[in-house]
Amino acid sequence: MERQKSSEKCVISILETSDLHGSMLPIHYANNQPNDVGLSKIAALIAKERSNNDQHVIVIDNGDLIQGTPLAYHHARLDNTPVDPMVLGLNYLKYDAAVIGNHEFNYGLDVLLKAVRESQFPWLCATIADALTGEPFLGKPYVIKELPNGVRIGILGLTTPYIPNWENPNHIQGLRFEDAVQTASKWVHVLKEQEKADLVIVSYHGGFERDMATGEPTEPLTGENQGYQLCMEVEGIDVLLTGHQHRSIAGTEINGVVIVQPGSAGATLGKVQVELVQSEGKWIVASKKSELLPVAGVHADPKLTELVSSYEAKTQEWLDQPIGKLTGDMRVQDPMQIRLKDSALIEFINRVQMELSGAPISNTALFDNVSPGFPADITMRDIVSNYIYPNTLKVIRISGQDIKDALEQSAEYFELAADGTVQVSAKFRDPKPQHYNYDMWEGISYQINISRPVGERVIKLDYEGEQLDLTASFDVVMNNYRAGGGGNYLMFQDKPVIKDIPTDVAELLANYIMERGTIEATVNHNWEVIWD
Image 1 (cartoon, rainbow, N blue to C red):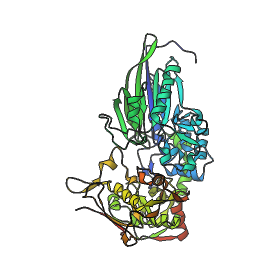
Image 2 (cartoon, rainbow, N blue to C red):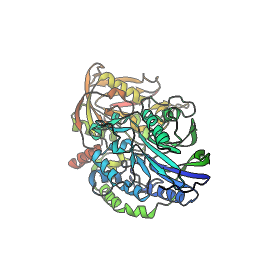
Image 3 (cartoon, one colour):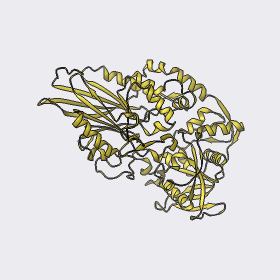
């Protein structure tokens, strides 16, 4: 590009979406009520930023784009021929780049690569490589944007390398996942020394493993989140865009690196504004700041809404498809109560998993506090509103000790407040809610006393009327995320896989109900949480 005469000052605004998770329209799919989220609202904020002629605007998506809503699921699983609706949205908004997120792999490589081919912007992923050649996956570790005034901006994409601990191995076959800090050190050097970038932006689909002020660890240092380490150990990063943890972070720096994280589902747009000035013939960063722009009160972009209207119409028709009927009560009135004692909803999911897999023991979670449970007349909307992830099932062989250790880890979900009431513990609440990491079991009988110290809370654990033998082996069915050790359930990692059921659990539940026509709510009260 021919360089024009440089001005003395250059203002650049970097806009970030992250963890959109298929959120296009501002609705709750459980009931179609309004919701202040979605790319269609983000679109209006991007347009407003671009209307300011005093700044150059760069727009980046930081990953976990194509999975997470019924709209995304319907496209990936049932009608994958058209352009991916989320890619359609980013194309319309003329995004400059996107980063591969861990959930991009959930529907398999064919679906992901199709979305990449449809994109009018590059996908960046320096930390993912071809296992045979070592070449970066998709061939794009970074891009260079050169502005008319000659400012060169380097954008490096990084993805958390922890993906093999969660993902179906078939979905990542032939790929190698590399450490984010080591990879960033290599490529930031290239951007600074070879590409002569005046501004280095790292877009990292990962979060922060340490307290941003003190540097104290806030989670096990597994390599899943290396944001703090990137800021402290990789020289040359000016801006770090983050995600994965669904946190809302802005207005701060770590070791001189300005950081931002825009929550999830398009509730906010991350913005970093950088001012560069010329000094001795070079552009240098004079100031930088980050903020979050909320979509609350913003009207959705009507053109983008129209572009995805056919996708939405098909999705809504599918969601309203009758599945079957329920006798009894499987509603979620109080999520905490569901997690304190056995309920018909959790028992039903566990029993379906046991029946379809043949395993005598099962676990599952109430993934989110907005899960509504099942009404008397069950539709597909009810299925996907309760089972929100495209998980599959695995039966793994584990020891009785593994079961006890897993129960102790789940028991850490609770803590007693000063007034003696039960609440979610800080470990499962901060830096983001992790309701999906609290499991409830069927096929065993157990009691948890949360007034006891952490690690000593399981006070009863029986199998078939006898105390569970901690040295014996048991076949347990669980979702593929948990079976791989997801949620730091490391006791499940690398255990023998006895059976793999590759069908999505939501589909399994729907088929189970359709085959029977009517299901019945039952509760055998095989477990409970108590406190003195």
